[in-house]
Image (cartoon, rainbow, N blue to C red):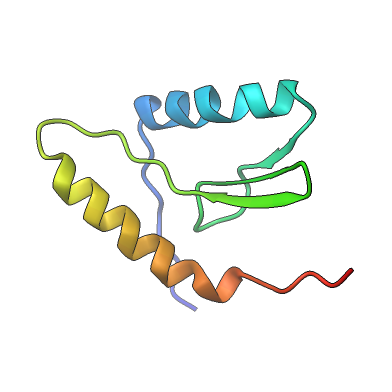
Length: 82
């Protein structure tokens, strides 16, 4: 297995916190230890995958990267049975 180092900026961490904190305050459960994903949220019987990007003047590249990452994460999705 190849180890990789993940680089996250303070802006990125602030974005994750700003997005997740209101969910947590409303009773949702969030996890940020779900590498390689940025965060997962569980609230109101829903499970959300969060891929966050801070953007500058080249937002299109960040959006493309995020879409590619979310597509690659499809193998993390599992069916939940009632």
